[in-house]
Image (cartoon, rainbow, N blue to C red; front, side):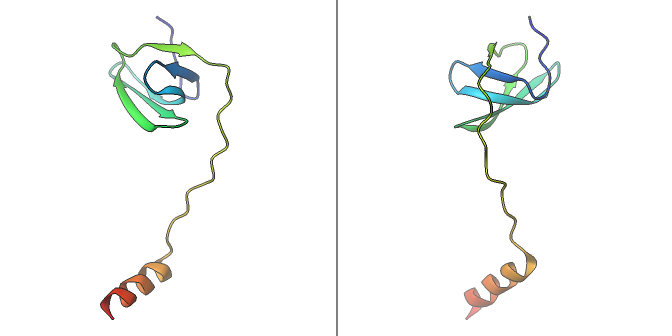
Length: 77
């Protein structure tokens, strides 16, 4: 069995290509390119190495407090 480390690009049969987010003796967490984040039992998951680069994802934006307050006021009206 290969020793995987955080940041490795892998392929899993069901979900396809992704990037390892966390690996320990119990759990393996992978951020898949098209299916989001999934957690697997480390001893059961079957992975293959991938040379495919990670896609560029736009950073997620957080709502500011002012926007949240405006939304609440609009709902109450």
